[in-house]
Every structure is written in C-alpha cells, then in structure tokens.
Image (cartoon, rainbow, N blue to C red; front, side):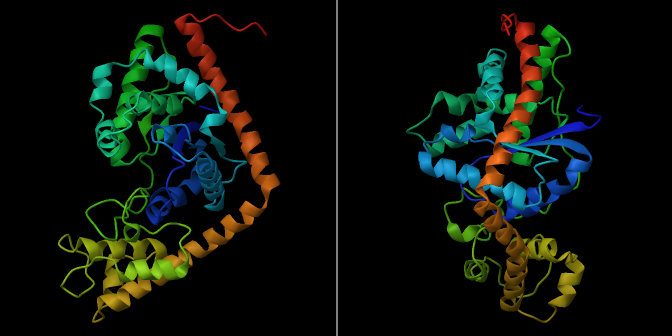
Amino acid sequence: MIDGKKVLFSGMQATGNLTLGNYLGALKNWVSLADEYECFYSVVDLHSLTVRQDPAELRQRARKLLTLYIAAGLDPEKNCIYYQSHVSGHTELAWILDCFTYMGELNRMTQFKDKSAKHADNINAGLFTYPVLMAADILLYQADVVPVGKDQLQHLEITRDIAQRFNAIYGDVFTIPEAYLGKAGAKIMSLQEPDKKMSKSDENPNASIYLMDDPDTIMRKFKRAVTDSEGCVRYREEQPGISNLMDIYGACTGKTSEEIEKEFEGKGYGDFKQAVGEAVVDTLRPLQQRVEEISKDKAFLDSVIKENAIKASYYSNKTLRKVQKKVGLPEKIR
C-alpha cells in the first residue's frame, strides 16, 4: 500500500510496435486505474536484451513506448511511468531472487521454450532467467495486482512462488501479487489468423494494426482481413474472423454485437470491413496526434523520464534495502 492505495504494476517491452490489441485490451483501460491504485508502468527495456537489438533502434523504441503511454491518457503525475533500466533495483533484486528460484521451475516456463525455438542461435542465460527479472519487477514495488493476459499467468505464478518461498524463510517481506481482475479490455485477434491474438511480433504485417499506422494502411489491412464464406455479419464461434472484426468495431464504437448485426443486416463483408476500418482510423487519430505533440516537446519528456525514475527508485530502494538486510548483506555507510 502507498498512501492508502493498493499498488498496481505493469510493463511492456520496447520491441516491436504496439498494436490495436495492446491499446483496446490494455492501455485504454489503464487510464482510470490511477484513481484506485498507485500505478507503476515500466518500459521494460532490460527484458528486450534477451534478443539481440540494434542499440539506436532500442533507445528510439523505448522513448516511443513511453510517449505512447502518456498519449494514451496515462498522466505522468498520477502514474509512475519510467524506464526499467533507470532503476538499478530491478537487476539487484533479480540476482537475489535468482538464488531463491529453482532450475526446475525455470525449465517449465513455456516462453523459454518458445523463444529458444525462435532464437536457436542465441539461447542465453538471460532468456532462461527472464521470469526472475519479471518477478523482481513486480515484487520491487510490493505490487498487490498485476494486469496479465493468459500468456503471462505462468510468470505471475512463479513470482508468487518465489515471494512465498522468501517470506517463509525471512518473514513478511513481499506482498503476494494477484492477477488484476478489473474491467477486461477487448480481446483483439489477428486479422489473418483469428484463432491467435493480435501480436506486435507477428511476422505477417497484415495480421496486426499498429497504433501509428496511417489511415490508408489501416484500410488496406482491413480489406485483406480473413472472414469466411457465409457472407453475413453475425457473431458466432464458427465465424472467428468476422466475430473478431465485430469485437474491434464494438470496442471502437461502443456498440453491442446485436446492434452491429442489425446495422449490417443485408450488407456484405465489403461494407462491414470499410466501416470497421473507418472506426479504427477515427479511434487512433487523436492518439496519433497526441504522440506527435508530445514527441516534439523534448523538455517535457525528459522531465517525465527523470522525475519518474527518481520516484520509482525511491519506492524500489525501500524494498531492496529490506531484502538486502534480511539475507545478510552489509548495510551501506551513508
């Protein structure tokens, strides 16, 4: 708890471009959480290093992601928006937690198996211990809740296991985090493979709508979106492609599936895809304009980065000092 509020932590990697799914499923719904929670939103740039990165591109993407956080409506005075690499407590705590994490636990992590298959030429130790750094990210701020998708639940479980193991030895040190079960955002699937989640790492550029896509690109991608042969706009399990487009249209317009079915009764997929594309363009336009405005204000962005790193370091150091003392590391002489 900080100032009577529970703590919420979340982070996104500074790799790839954020998608419409990231926005409608997460970012858009985070805006109101600052009233209820003390929120820490990290650009987890250290996690990006498990895969080789172009240094200049990584720095550029990290700044763009932090800008997108703000453009999406996250007030940097109400939320702590910061670079993971600017708070040394993340890596310091990760090493200590490494010593309380078992090899067998890390061997079971599905993401390690998936990434190892994709990057067979670079199966490094960081890729293997990635979940421990993620645990440190969360536990460092004594987070009560963490917004996670199904693909991240395994990471939250190992975080809880590590925290409980540490607490069993040293007493009540870490808050045991829970999955955030607040208002769920829209679940947006791939435009080309609607049985898969829309992903910023998808190799097919037509599968995802990126937040900074221009209107022509957005319209072209929706025209190419996978549907089916039935030809009618109905929300059914047997029609995952059209159901996904209905979810997107509903998230952008606030309309229910029943209202959408009625609106497009007797119309073909061409008309519907056109309408979905236009709704997405209208939804993303103010976000893109805000990104452009913020990006031009270097002094403002730099001040956010500096001040929020100080704030994050203050809270992280409180936890880190407690942990260091518990495990027997000598205190610094100040």
